Image (spheres, helix red, strand yellow):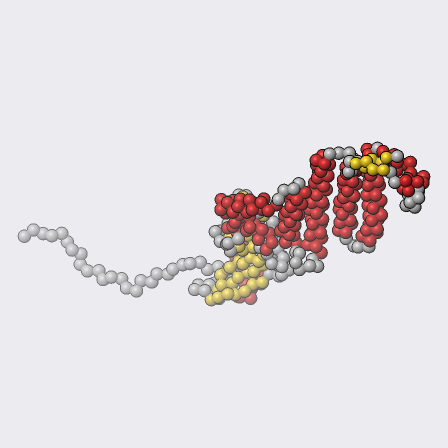
Length: 388
């Protein structure tokens, strides 16, 4: 009997020892199945595919069950997500390898076989690249929330994730070029020349891009913060992109500022600090001779009676100077949100004025007294000239 090897395309004599069952690794009951697969390459390929699917399913079930059991002992759901994310590429890898073996066992020409194998490995490479995206996103998000690593902080997660994706795309592209027999060296040289040309042509865009990356990593402000720029713009940050930052002013006007500008100017973040509260200062002058203790008490009570003024830290009053015509005081109090500064300043000034009027405390204003030391002497009035 002759056995045909479809993989190499030649015919060899059948091994009588193998087919007689003398070899202990193959039971005699399986000899007819072996002979059938040897005679029909399509059945052999189908058997390899079914075996690979069964193997992939068993490995995924056994390994997945063990990993899930270990993941249940943790307090977070991150490891559970990682387990489910990693099991999918394992199944895909075993299945694609089985399909590659099946394609090798068919009676195909060398060019067709190479094309099929490269296509299957391309699908596997793309699947592994997509899985790398997912694994990097989950892992970096978990490290950013945990706060256990000084290297990964919440504000650096987007930059690290972008770098991870670029690295995964680069490795995947390199593997695809090698898989299809393309020399990556020439492509890298061409990409370097094109990159230099693009860099000169789009230097402003690249400057905004890199500034956006540094802003995201350094996080001088975040969405929802109230910032003031050197040029005088003040508003709430509504969007931090890779090219520009958008501010919404109190007039409901959106201002778009390039990140290259934001990275080179002084920015006052009114929402920064240990908490979002902002302190406002109300400067008030009273006439000399006023009861300063009463002035301090009225100012503190006025601030405490306003519902928008924060009780912690408590409002305080400070006497700042002996002015030219007044005793200068300053009321300092905290508000919850920076955008309430204008309205609250108005309310406090109105309340302080009414309280001073009720208490008889004078608020001095600029006035000038003119004293005439001496009037000019009045001489005889000159009459009309007379003719001689």
